Image 1 (cartoon, chains in turn cyan, blue):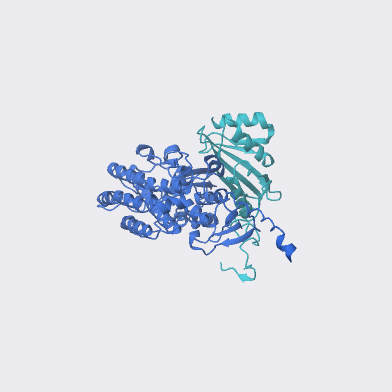
Image 2 (cartoon, chains in turn red, cyan; image 1 turned 60 degrees about the vertical axis):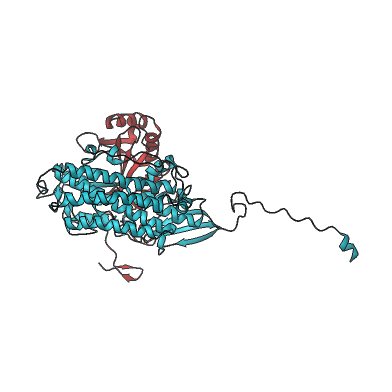
Length: 159
Length: 394
């Protein structure tokens, strides 16, 4: 299926949960979705035989600056041989998005990483805790407004 | 006293049955920490093992000991080119493959077409790097299981490849060789001869390795039917590379989503067939690597035959400033699918670089492979995934 077909299919099924996108003139066509509906949309993309997106290639958190955060899903189908990108955007004040861990297990660690680095909260994740940083680390290092703390547990951070 | 003597002895209690080795003898669960300093974790990784006697009930990997926030460093670079030495240091035993993925992604973002000669040299280097990485994987795996000698054989052959790398770009481990749009140096005049010599030398070594380790009875006993990962579980976890192909899934980005000049080269994709046990066991994952080395030699021989003339620096841009936009490019490294998600805001420094690391994803499937195994098998299962912590933690 082309990106246009997938977008039309999602619009027909989910209505205004599909909030936009760019399907032409970019290397990877993408569809913007409402963060709260991410799990339902992904479950349909995986289970519908016409899309059959059985692999989540990558799940990335992004800080677009100005208090806007995003989660980008790169999906691939090994049987249908097509790729599609989903983008869910949220504000830093309310960084909630539905977890897709129940759809692809790949998301388990990737969502933990996005939480660790950006503070994005994945609702429905079974084990949402820091993965790369220490458990008692303060702040989210990949946010654009992050400042390296001077001290960590009383130790001076050499920077 | 007499009464007591005449009483029949108490019937002995029925012995506890032991179906399935130890399952009926359920004891209190215990938590054992394996690592972060443990020889079989291949780096600083801590595995929290929940065990019931000798049987592993659950494994919880704790990672991040080698975390240096590669992605944050990238955002602070003044130039895309400066990212390459950092990319080298992710999977430090196959640095060429990391560079390859990054330059392909950056060139796609910049819409650069590189000369043919560059493409072929890159493919040769990437395949050499696959051989080096698999030699380390195989050697250390033998050592995990208890065979020390194959490790020395593997290291001896690895040196020969590192000599070729050193002669080409001056470094043995971390190269900074592939640049956006080209290469830092052209190859030496005697390059083709050296490469052919190596191929001629290396083929019989693979056979020797098979005789020594692959078909060794003890090795098979330790690895066959251990840590089985079924194909559907493997796909759902998103594992890639030899771990996925070991489960019998014929999926290799060099064939299925070709980049560079791989579509012009003839090679096969080995998959696990369960020859010694079940499809997707440790032996299958191991054996895929051995067969992949043979295929890499084939690719190198073809590429060096076809190597065209040209200037390797012709397409290197003077100014790297991609348009605003994003791109996700994946390449097949020795460990699996390495993906770079690059977001550009139109300036000279990258706005965001996310690395989808194959080791990170493959390690996340460790609990699914390990439940119900023995403690000693965890060492075999972890070794068969072939992780490099520098890439897991980035």
